[in-house]
Image (cartoon, rainbow over all chains, first blue to last red; front, side, top):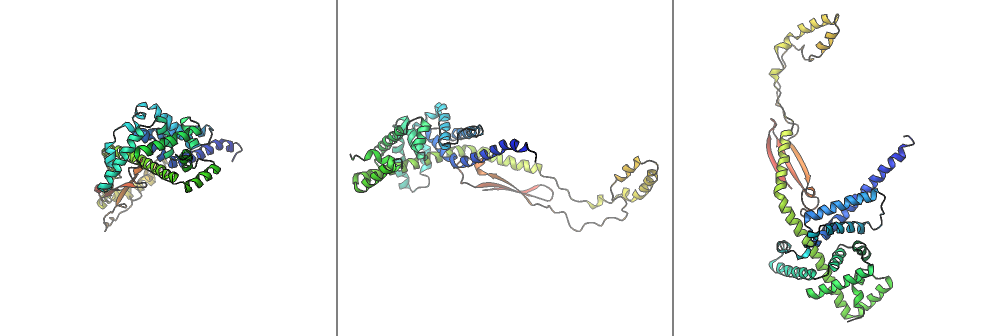
Length: 179
Length: 193
């Protein structure tokens, strides 16, 4: 091996290592990202496009020597911004009638349980529809397991604001859903 | 309303500093109102999670249904292309090996050797003939028929590359089984999960 082969190989090895990291992250975060995006209102196909684009951006980010701190928050922020750019889909969210979804939700349940489940989800859907945009987004990100600090990074809010927003949203839902 | 209630959600989310979390925990054990609120908030969190799962499942289910006809057609197209691209197999015809040219070959070789001594260029021409040419006795007819080495061609396509995530259980594949007969034609085509 010549002396100059090591520095020539290094960028490739670094790229391979980063690719492997991105693959691991993809396996871990693909589903939470998809779930967040479809709950924001994107269709399944749109959500998959956004997830793909987000991971391509991550690959470029890492290959360009970008920071590796809070990669999960970084990915959610990129995906969230891309979803926002698709204004029509983004604003469809929970306002869209979900009757067919309701049938699917209760498909395997007994008739009594199916009725209860449908009613519970209907109440929750209408209650979520009444929340402020930031409250909805904070709740959905919290449902994907993000910490308050990460949610703040995604939405551009202070951590204390995130805590107050989530507290307010949960209390509204608890009241509206009569749980 | 209890003074600790504004901290309950953050405490449930493990977002309070350790000293405050310990304080809230001690309080909740003693306060019936806060215990009831904690249960309410936990219940709401569970319902939100279940609802998000349901929306995700329903949307991907709807998306998958839209793709089923297209994917079925794609599978059939793949199967059909494999049929046409599969190597054609021919039966061995022993009669075609024994030819009049084979019996006449020694004469030609002798002639070639005589030419070889004067014209080296002809050497290449003669040696390009099949080595079987000197055979004078007829080749005995084979006692067994030719059988295909492989009886089936399998195409494995990961389901996750064809369907929306969540629609198909993880790790599930569809397998297209093709059984190819001795004449190269397909005898059986079966798709199974």
